[in-house]
Length: 171
Image (tube, rainbow, N blue to C red):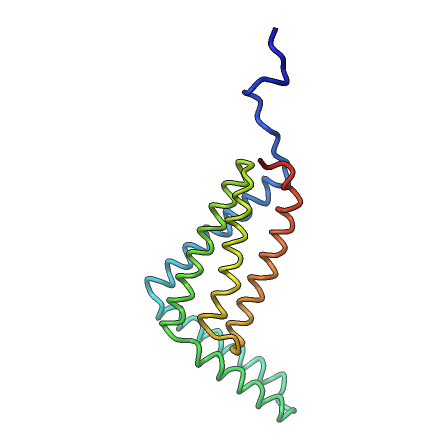
């Protein structure tokens, strides 16, 4: 008679929540990889899109602070800071780091989908790159670098925490 506890054909059960997290990461990373390829192949279009977005935000912000002269000077300073960092080389460099970061997070999610602990390590490395890269590319005193790093840090920390809660299911 075969003992069921020693049957190697039984695979560990993957929690549904971990499956959902992995697929969310895979889909988001895939989208960001395509965006990074777009930014690498044509950084000028990324600069144009950012310029259009800045013009829209500038008009909204100018309307919001039209009665406050100090607010207007801060908006002008902020927009000048973003415009100075909105260059083709910065967008190309940021796209490269985004590509590397999202490849690591996607591979990490695939490994965690297969219940491998090394997947979380790759995912964390991808998140660290996503936080550090904008600060290196745009500068630590630039609002664009800071805001991109902050967004990557918050979303990365949330997902790392959620993945870490499911570490007991990984080998």
